[in-house]
Structures are given as structure tokens and as C-alpha cells.
Amino acid sequence: MELLVAVAIVGMISLGITQAISQVLVINARASNHMIAVRQVQQAGDRVSKDVLQAQNVTATADSGFPLTLAWKDLQDKVHKVEYNLKEMPSSSSSNALTVLERKHTIDGDSYTRVIAQYLDPGETWCEEVGRKLVFNVTAIVGNGPQQAVETRVYEAEPRPTARDS
Image (cartoon, rainbow, N blue to C red):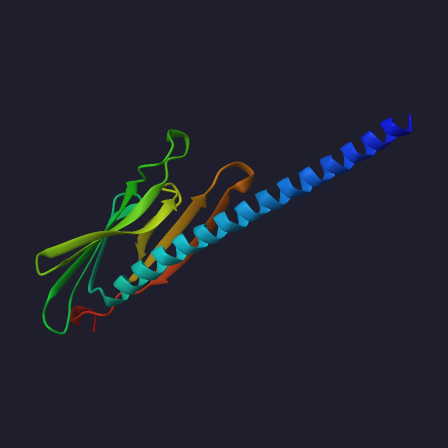
């Protein structure tokens, strides 16, 4: 009888330890996913804001505002054109199709393209022109189930004035 009680107590202690370890792992994964989501949102907002502040011309198209086209001339009279697009992530599952924010920068005809941010929700990532300001809403979703982290931020930037604005 004493042996059965001892086995039952050891079993309950083992179950408690297993659940505690499981909780720690889930919380750790959720925190890690949240940090990734925050970083992706910050990268997108920072890069778009910097380009908008330099731009003399801003064109947001379609319902979501993408592609977003920005253009300006620098001090050496080089023409810059930056185009932002949302493209489907290659690893996205069909149930939760996420996108990347791609930036194509053209300087006097030479261009290069790079990914600025990943894990973006295409339904919640948009930009629009409000007066002279560009409002940019970006949402990142990282992970699934109880480990999923979602981060949303809204950025506002106003392009530099042109001669006709003065």
C-alpha cells in the first residue's frame, strides 16, 4: 500500500514538473516570436519613413497603397526612385499567407532590390496619402497557435516640400 502511495506521489510530481517545463518552453517561444514581430515592424516603418522624408513625389496605388512609389533628386542631381511592394513569402502556408516588404531602389537607371521585412499580414499592412502625409500601417505575425505573436504599428511621415508647395 505504501509503495502504491509513493508511486502515485512520484507520478504527480513528475506530471507537475513536465507541465512546468512545457509552460516555460511555450512562453519562451512566444517571447522570441514577439521580438521577431517587433523587429520586422520596426524595420519596415523605419525604412519607409526615411524614404518618405527624402521624397519629393509620393504615389500610393491600389486599395492597400502598394506598390508605393517614392521619387526624389539628390544634391548631385541623381534621380532616385524607390518602389515598395508586398510579395508572398515562399514559405507561407495557404491558410495564413504572409508577405515580405520588398524595396526596389533605382538610381539613374541602376536598380537593386532587397527584402526589408518579413511575416507581414497583407490584410493589415497598408499605406495611404492623407493630405501631404503618408500613413503606413504595418502588422507582423510570427508563429502559430499559443506561440503566435502579433505586432502592429502606425507610422506617419511627410515628404520634403517641393518648389510648388512653397
